Length: 238
Image 1 (cartoon, rainbow, N blue to C red):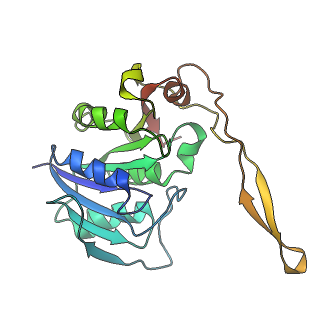
Image 2: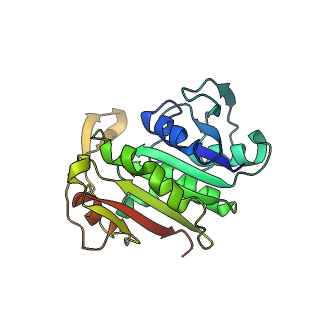
């Protein structure tokens, strides 16, 4: 039976990872190793100088082997594949992230970072994301279909599938766009807000980017903005 390792960057009990684990059971034996809390924007970082803790957990989906991890999403993949599981997994699934991972955001994403770690270790890997805090009808209708299409469709060295679901109603979905290019843009412009003055001339800053929908045709960002599911092949080898 196919062995499937799942993680995310929103935490082990996030809604998205529960839905992904439930769908993945159709395709094999599911193991979840996920952060014990929020790790968004953790990128592809791993713990080198510090230890991290792993605990077995009860999981809402019956039959899933689950562990929480105090490390990063990439730590979850490494510890799952090389310590917790009885053998190396056949596939890594990461997500479903609460928020798009397209364009420049991919490089910051803990969701995509975990998928890249899986592929770095020679494991076929797929990342899944959806519009933040929005309608989930499209994701839930098409998740198993896309898993079935992609789970055994191997890619080249350093490549992952990156799937993003729009937040529209199911009857508003315009279709699936495959092989969308990764946009060079971003959904939020880079800006910072000072929220406090500190001693010795310091200050406390917080990201305060402005949302925008400016993406070229044929890209991942344009696809989800226009109401399509975006399926991209992303290459981590430059």
